[in-house]
Image 1: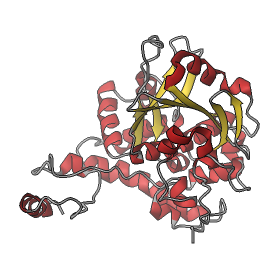
Image 2: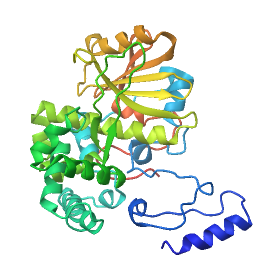
Image 3: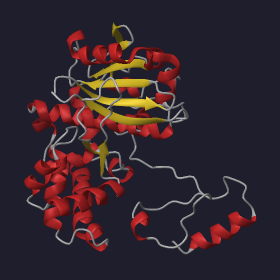
Image 4: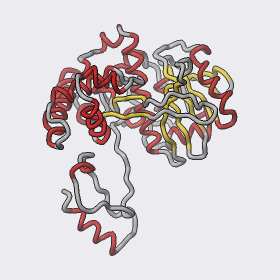
Length: 351
């Protein structure tokens, strides 16, 4: 109800005490609402789909990013038993949208997510005047889904979808604004100046992979490349939400050198310059070889390198090298607070 904004503006101008109003609404408002820009009067908080800590852990705990910067590997505990590749794929494909999570039957959830994509392509985007051909937008979104957690060239994406570069640029801006996709920028400093500048592409909600690529658990578990992309997209979703919550403040990047010999899936750079480096492996038995790029970055950054995390699908936390630790993906949302956690795959919520 955009007409309420004028009343809020007058009330805030008369009494500027903070915390009196919470204004919620669709991200469409950035494209459609005119009038009061609210500059200097509101604090904007991004609402991402629900992630593991909200679904299974302690949503009131300090941001994981802040805990890592304060405590290093002590921020992690071994997760409850029961997390394996199948349950991680379940976690990813079940989506983070509350409406989808309330639907316990897999088939009903798939229909809800398919309907969400259909509505986006056929109603929402055309109504905003960006995509008048739903089929083209759907093909472009499918190309991004097939390359989630990758660093594809823009040409590869729009050629795959059979659209022009100009249309792809408009679609990118729309999908980012509607919080369907996220372009993670490349990171470099003077020691890694030859880094590739292409962004890493992600679907914000890994649950959209199922309706876009028409996949299920069996196909995901048979396809090693697809499985790796699913787990990477799931992990990125956790850290994206944690960065938004961080009191210290941290931004998300990726790193890939120009020769493609070294790449790191995610880098979180805090405002004081400290770096948390993250590699994601869909493996229950990660080795020191898997962490070689983390060790390389540690040698490049010195004391700025806070900790390197090799996020895996095994059962426990353990040290691999100096300031480099293997952490189960479920360890990203497990805490030692003693709160009840959900058994993976059951659909029940914390008590």
